[in-house]
Length: 453
Image (cartoon, rainbow, N blue to C red; front, side, top):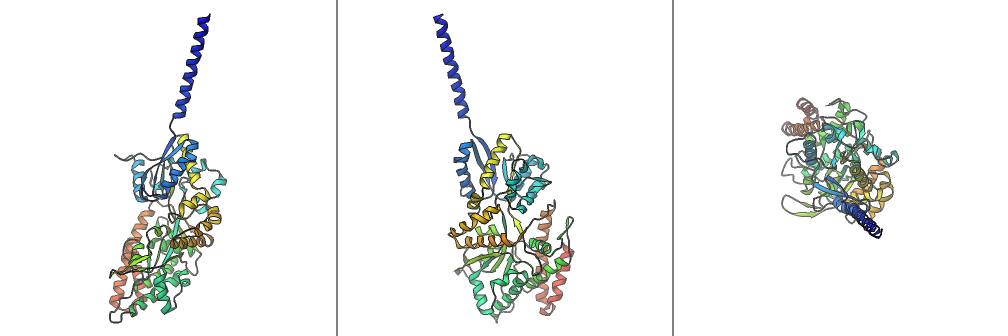
């Protein structure tokens, strides 16, 4: 009997030890790890990576979640990688749990149902906190699959140092840049003003303005004037397009608009232009130092203003910037992704994130409560000016969402290439045939563009 009691005792101890071992095994089980491809900074120097480290050490630690960045690239590279994985191309990587994407990537996927519909994880109240146009853009085929985390728009960047010299002699005002009509009028005046500086050299007037996205100028312009820019899967060339064309072509043919390839940051850095419309995220690449062709440099003040609009059009501006897609997997992984995304889009934290990158926050509360204070604490005056322009844009403008056309990217690329080519052709004809032919060349150039587009 005694022997039986000891045997029972030892058996109980072994059982307890076994259970303790099971408990230890559970405690040592690794966190739910989710992977991310993103575009926000370099692999080793990324504001988002720093925030992810903070998440992993706080909320992630508590909830047993770890976010792991497996690629920092650009949207084009991610677009190609996602499609290669989605089409199961040989050698393609597996899709991560989350990736940065534009709706165009989702539209190009063979089956977008592999992506989570965020309405399954966010309540209507939570989604209502985002700016409605941002949510609308992320909705593809009736499902919300691209969650906004940082958005950009188009902003007018001005080399105010150079503009002030122009203003002192001509009376030009920054307020003239509020409308496209005013901007292109100043572009014409700037060509004449700079040409007159060297009377011994004819036709050497300088470019005033550069636009990164000619396609967006016409698209948003036509829509702001109450017309459809698209006719099905093609561009509609109507009266609103003509309205946008005239001042733009007039300033371009006389030499006031930049037509070379590349981004607007370059001609502003070299002094070949002093005003630009570009993505607000371009602030990362603008410089407050201009280096001229003769290798002299000048420190300048670069200021940001809301994008111009037409006098008779409504205040409409292109929204830009990608969001994050989540790939369907397990309940645990999907829930881990949602925990991170809700943490990242917290109104205060989202402002902390975007103000380090030149992007806009994605929630109304961020604009109203946290962004004004954040602006006061920005050390870089170029960034402070940008965020002041953001506040004005968000308060006064409507954000335009481009239609989800499968051939949108092809239309955009073909338009950009051909409109520049047509205007270069028109510029050459204008110089050849003389100033008296300007009005004729404006419309001849449009006809030439339509024929070749």
